Image (cartoon, rainbow, N blue to C red):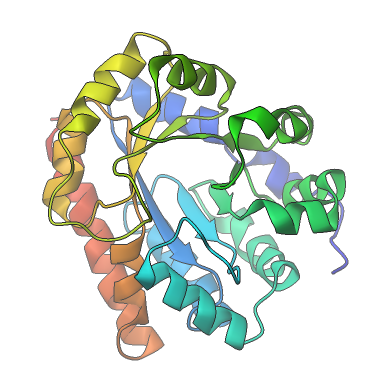
Length: 280
């Protein structure tokens, strides 16, 4: 893929940190929905990004389909498989971002595994992300011990690398990850893979309290949030952002692309309403 030079529109776009600062000033909790690029097709992905942007999303996590998605549950795995079968690749995902991002209010956070980054070359990969307007990056299989290989070059390209904290992590590791993470800190609400759960583990409340003692960075909670009530609960526990993946992907995949986009937009609005009520 031949990526155009860094555009003025991309340069003017809000960063992940700036978006959180804006929301914090207004005592608002961020909504971060996740979709898989290329499911059911890239044209729908472009429309879905625009719909999420107008349906309450404050930031949007866009997953690059990968053949061995170790952190993903069955819903997102199935979406990635469908996208790969349609021929979706990193280059085509970046083309969609380049097309849509200048018109979005919500910064895009790319969710991808480490191997595609290494295969492309770290500097080239980050340069391409920056050029198309990606503002954040989440790499679920990047351990803290190797994070330095991405953290500094990502910052140089204007891309904030957000690190994940597992609920089983000891305090020393939690502290180290929180100190290194850029944009915000991503707290995984449950052990295991992504997916819809019937309730959010109460351990999350304790972890949020613990994290507040070691960092003043925004705290986002993801994995397992599938209902507006979950989003509201996590916000009430002190989260600065709720991240919802499988429940969004599931709705987008149901029925025709038009029906999926409609259902996804309605669900997104219900999530935003739930967390907005808590700030009034």
